[in-house]
Length: 514
Image (cartoon, rainbow, N blue to C red; front, side, top):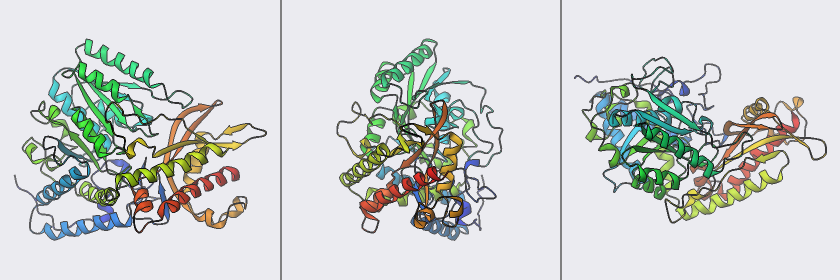
């Protein structure tokens, strides 16, 4: 096989949008991807939407830019695929340290373009390894991702794959059929279903599949788009212990709002874990990874051909080389992970105790505001209970996603919820400088507040209230927020909380001005 030498590279901003599917393509008019982010820093946009995405920071962009320069300098001396493999191994080693698994040599770190890609890879290797028909069980897409069901079912979830192949969306990758069962974790009114009820439904579905001779791929989400854990780790452990040969567990930790101790515990149980560097860690969108424990890799003798359009050879550790994947480079994925590691270095430099102290103060302030302001209603959640998994609690037992509904102030004590279209309008207007549009609004908001721009998590469908279909906005605290609050050069605790309060102030003004 001959490897091509590449003597030119696109600009950093373009590379950051390469090596993924259509979700990170830029809109021709706005210049933003589907998550509302440009591929370059926007210092005036306050990033409070890490449950969806965050605009890349200046430090992360600079790191990606430096790596791009190094790639260019090496391009005349060696094939791009060789450079890619070496640099991705460097990133893999550092990621293992941040995950606290540097001593777990039997855990493989596989890079993927996105969390959805990681789900597809997990389902394909399990389906290829077990032989029996596969039944995948997941929680509702509104709490995970719109493409997850397709990915688990072995279908193309976009019209372009991570490695640039043009495909037909929803078409199966192979002739094998993977049945996907979806379980709701919120009720029609947006409240969480009782954990015992969710667990019981999953046990029922899994038991029926196992009785029919199917292998079960069970996804445990920790945490979901609105901050839930489901099904409970205790119920998953019981199922897995009962059927260790007929059931495989995938932990969807793509929000990456878990501590190293929690991550190690999941791997110790024998579960696969999917993470990303683009949610809590605030790296650019499309930086995923799949962590595979030995109990899974020992079953996989070779990789299925269905991964050819989704995974490059170097995305897998060296021990997997020669398994039939193409020896090519995905420089976009490489640069995005370099940017994510920049955020992770800063975050993990903060002692875990200090992280917890700040997150508690942030949560106290935000919850008080959301519970006291008549224009908002906190979407109910549940405690982040991993008691059966880890004994000592860490910062990941504290909420970092705060979903809430919006209300018009009605007459008397009656409030009227904003519908989904109205909520979406607030979400988009929140990101705009409205200082020059005061003629269209009332004058009760200071010009400085109207000028401020905030990005929250994209609205999530949450059933209906009083017959009105509603969506929840999500105010999120992130690794970058922690560094700004607790680091030596940031805004400090009060400053970070003040930014979040200002975002809520602007939302309140937009509701009143509508």
